[in-house]
Amino acid sequence: MLENIIEVLLLSAIQGVSEFLPISSSAHLILVSSLYEFKSSSLLIDISLHLGSLFAILYYFRMDLLDVKNNKRLLSLIVVGSIPLIIFGYVLYSTGIIYELRNVKIIAWTTLIFGIILYIADRNRFDKKISSNLNFQSILFISVFQILSLIPGVSRAGITITAARILKFNRLDSSKISFLLSIPALSGASFLGLKNIFYQSVEFNYLVLIAIFTSFVFSFVTVKFFLIYINKFSMNVFVAYRIIIALILFSVIY
Image (tube, rainbow, N blue to C red; front, side, top):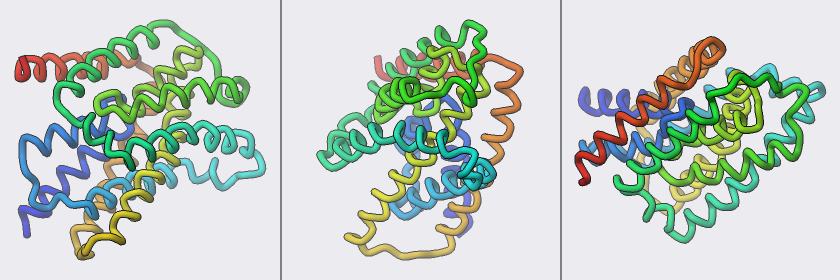
């Protein structure tokens, strides 16, 4: 019992922290799972972890989401910007191609390459803001980049922040765009998982509640402090982290 709880706590920490940082949650979950075979890992636990992150981001941006009257345009753009990812994600998922991409060699290269691209995009100081500069063209540009996040190691947060920085949005608003786009992404991932549950015999237990709650906590804390951090500092620490992880993986692979 204690071992199962510890495993769920570890998975929750990985999901909650890496989901919203530009370091790729899917890559970390795949790598950790390949190093250690979690006895508690299952489809239901995976869905629970994503739900915890979804609830956290919904709660954090609850005022913006509930104030539909004043944020109707922003919310509409977020929905539009999520459509390409949902379509391509469903195609890759239903065809099984998504599973072919889940290997360490791909993760190593994408971690390195897109970390460097993030560094280049983040070098200059820009001042575009969501309130005055986010439009259909810019959200479409970001949404095309977001499709790449279906490849493990790219990082959905990382690639959307990169795209927003290329468009000259400031770091804080680039991160907010990324977080808002995570809502439909997490909702889609959870829906696909719940859809599969209907075809399997699953057992709802206490680990599910622990996974949802702890993932919520880790996700909420990560979002809160990342926005504080990024308002003062660059993305360099995350770029350095990605390069180190990539080099470690290269040493193992080659």
